[in-house]
Length: 190
Length: 192
Image (cartoon, rainbow over all chains, first blue to last red; front, side, top):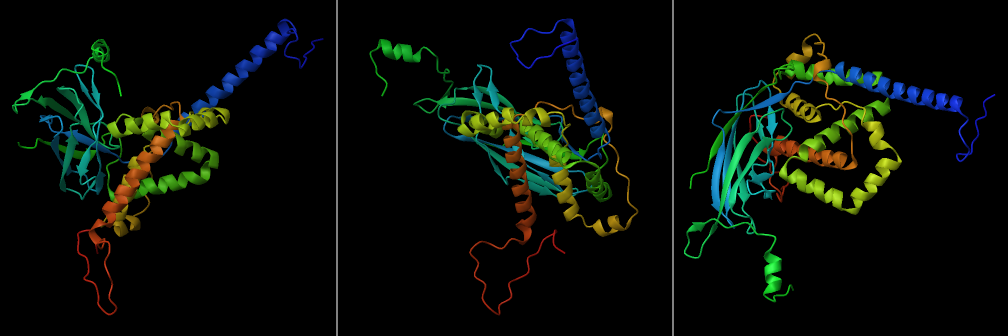
């Protein structure tokens, strides 16, 4: 006779209880994997969706440079080679510098979205304001069209800081020792 | 300083039917045809997984990453995660393969603008192609923030698309209509 109690503190009923637990785990796992398989099968039989791929030109890299506090402009020409209308919405990925700084640009696209008829061409102007506290350097990212499969245009933005006499001069990124230096000089944070 | 220009082309995906009015109508019909065959829970679960997949894609963009960070940092994110784990919503919705809902949206809008829709509807129904096992996206863990970000990205796209559709015939805001005076008819390639 095997006794199965409800008290969790009660000692297990020996090898039979272990066997039952293993059996229960097996059935749970079997059910989960079967359901997962059925979901995948369901997905395989789901209707295929006509889609769009963004194909950049071979030399499709966008390069721009600017001084902090100003902004840079990028222009994207989109040609719809499909036989149906298409809506395109440009989005920027975060831009990363070799120094490790990551810039999340506040993009302003004009127009924000373009509706392209079959064979139509639209030009989008994307403005990237360069924040005042952006460390100088070369930032790399990708200009994408929201929701399109694959594709993207590489973007390289070279950022410099303006010196007093107006010449562009690279600014070193802020170091972590700056507050320590301030403390040594006796400066206080407000 | 000259503005740098890049050119891109939008072409049909090689592994899917070409975007024509006939295939897009077939896609709508096939999606509607599947609905009676699945349960409401399956439909909601598939939609949740699809929106979450869109949210994961959106989080890779600059705006999406900022939005994702804000959702995670706020009280809504904490409470959402609590509900998510307690009600086991994530566990339930993470088994559904996501579908390309932005492609669905774009195709449905294109059908609305097609000039050969009547001809396409008169043709015998085209059987929709199946996605195929090799193109099914593997289910991924669905989080609360993924779903919220996906809803944001999807609704933003809907708003922009509808505005673009309405733009050719949209009268300017603040127009005063005078009785008896007929406003000039708007013109545009999208109007009949």
